[in-house]
Length: 591
Image (cartoon, rainbow, N blue to C red):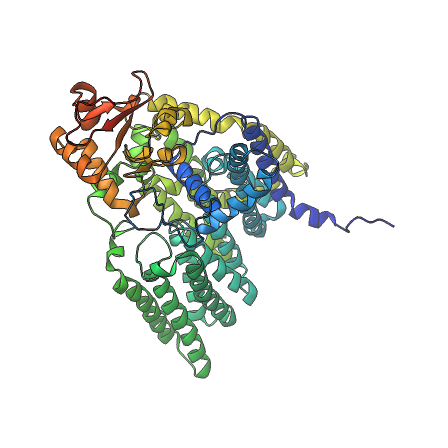
């Protein structure tokens, strides 16, 4: 008698898209481990800062303590990142640390974690795409998501929260599509709350899902599912808020993640729609009345949130010092419009929008088929929202590409089945998968090479930090100096926190607006005498500036004028120029 599980071919086929994602992840991890002996060089400040937060958590910083204590010390404010991401990395780090040195285990964790989130995203992708065209459509959609424009979020070292956010949003969409059962609707609510607790980037798509549940209530359909959704959303949002936010920050308001003002709006909306649903069961209610009640619930939820924090009407950074907008925020590449990117880096724009443009062509040809079904309308609405966000802020292109894959995948399968030569080849998707599997490591490297070549031709680089000042070797001299407070360009801050024990004045995080305004003003706006006074007043010990980026006002003055109160402690050819700020009365003393 066979001891194997009775897996039918149909069951096996369901796992093929996820298995393909697992193969891609394994290939990426293998490629990352080939470089394990070398020092890990992060490409983005967020990656460095995330590892700093994970280190602090592993070193004993409490679950609720999300304050980065070396970032603008004495400014007691929590990061807007979720501890849930830190926990997932810590869980992965612990068994690896049993067989590796701590520094190697840390690098291994950073290599393994991002590709694993690709497999996590492939599960809801398969659940959604399979409804449109079976296993082939699901496999094709997953293959497309392994393209250049999406895969970079899953590359080794990309320890950010966007991939997990996308997974939570996709699960919410998948369960919303299956909302005919209360369990699915409830899970959609849980995933909605989880996505919001990780960040606000998926809010447009989550609002679309909420609108579909509201339409169900107006139409008098799936009422038990509507109640399950609103109960699960309100309860889960409250639970995630309590789990992720320290009690002393429960009344803290912001516009970038699930804070008290957002939670209040969610709870009011959930209670309102649940109460309306129960009220409609007690007496006949016309559709017009349902529309009016639904509008009142929405206005009540929105009004509650804005009444608690009205500045959120002005956007994510509405609650912070407006001075950070001209000094820093307006210069962030990922919030740049697509049109600007198309002018300064056409290959980057092409890579980001090639798949969405194909999706628009598919919609023009067969959009009526998607509009004719509920799940198609959900995917179309999410894609439209993602494309709009991507046009306004290029960072939304990742979401636009994933939703585009859900539109293009089933269409490709449909067209292939109409073409007689392809219809005979049952394994065509697998052949395509193998081909792409070979190309997966090559395409991102080619794209990065093209972008790097373009970046060298002008000031609009997608990478604001010179490569030399991302490597830990560049911070070796700074790491040996007595601990102090370091002023550096805002994007260099996380790398200093990662590679030294110093504190920094600023890092590229809007919640720490005080440090950003002060640091950028000293570096780029103040005269030499004004900068000296500000440095002493803030108690700054060192100024550290990349040698490849000495164009700021203070950097130029330090390099040319060499004031006695700023003693260079780095070598002349060092990639990081370090100046020790001499206290008053000690100018001219030996360093």
